[in-house]
Image (cartoon, rainbow, N blue to C red):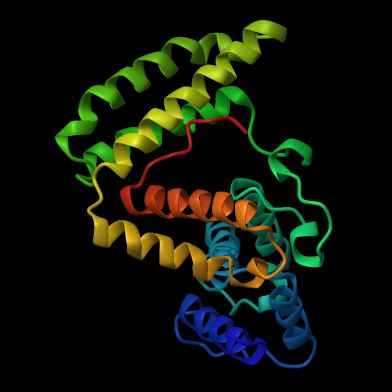
Length: 238
């Protein structure tokens, strides 16, 4: 979509989040949202950032609330974009033709601590199984993952050096195993649909990326979409 369509889509989404109250995306707000489009922030990622702001707003405010302006969502949208970019191995250089390097290797970590990460993983796995989004094929794997994470959670805060690196490597292996299981749940049509959706998310970047880099990012986006569909966490600590 072009910039105007992007801004209209954001305005419509903001209206729904504000319980139908229309807050126009015009003037400085239009410039802000246009900047998101120019940066290549996918619509779905921008909406995820807006969701974050509303979750915090609803948690911190009394029942009687004023409609939220899009300007207040900017920081959350940019945080969501940074996380998305790391997850799909993109850097700012992928928009301007600069040399490509996986952002996961260069960006400073600003996420939760390792113990907090493990706690969230356990909660998400439990919720995914309880919600019925996973078939019985996942039961054994989830039990093993939950057991391993529960065993290391108490010690994770005190792990240093080689022991910490070994744990992080173990989490990466468990994450890949979980993804492999998830991919097996898809038929060919479902897999094709996910890949097409991933390509749409990367539209703003494709022109500036080498084919190999684009293929890696497309696979990473497809895996993220698969996690969303099944409610699976990212076990890897990156």
